[in-house]
Image (cartoon, rainbow, N blue to C red; front, side, top):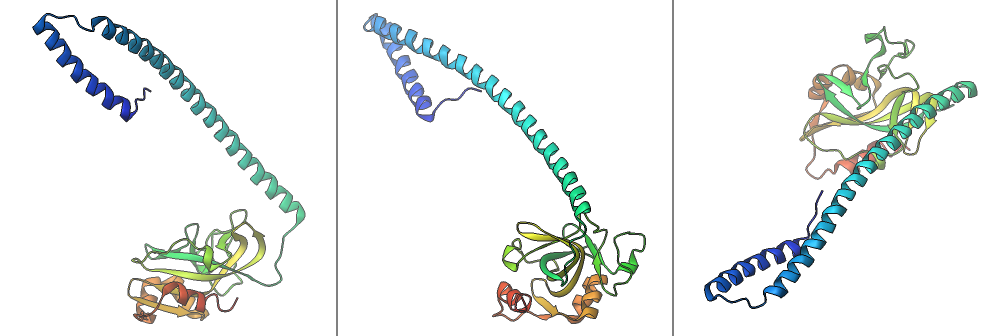
Length: 253
């Protein structure tokens, strides 16, 4: 490992320059002034440097042992995580579905990737477009998250304040999601069996559109770029995105 402070490095460099000048003068003048004192200091320095080298070796060994133990601790935590997830799922299955009598509002940031609306966990689209997926609700006329069956589920934040930072550029949206069916509450959000976008604000750097209309939302989920071009208007110069999001999406909480 080996570690030397900046102060020690600077001091060693200065002393080496002085030693070179001292040796040159000593040879030129054929003098031996201070030779014994310098040799005693050299012995003292060498003895301490040897001790430092020994300690460096011990530190390297201890760091290797620490890294090994940390890896083992990480493995134990991962095992605990997998075990707890399995146990919770089993107990929740025994406990029965936690059906919410009314949809629970959640919030999510959606991005458009390769023509699809994605929330970072799931692609959103109308259910009949993917009939092979067991998590899709054939009785729902509107969109839901693809392959979102529990234990994964549809994930959403509890409030707009907890959403991750939103940067401009690509087409994206902030959505209010009605969480229903079996809903599980976490520290900062919800995990639900069924999620449906009931309101959204879609925007890029210069334009946006806001809607609670199910047909417009379905159109955006099915064809985001086309729908955005059709419905979007220029963002007012005095509009503040987070304020507008809170007014439109959070105003009905």
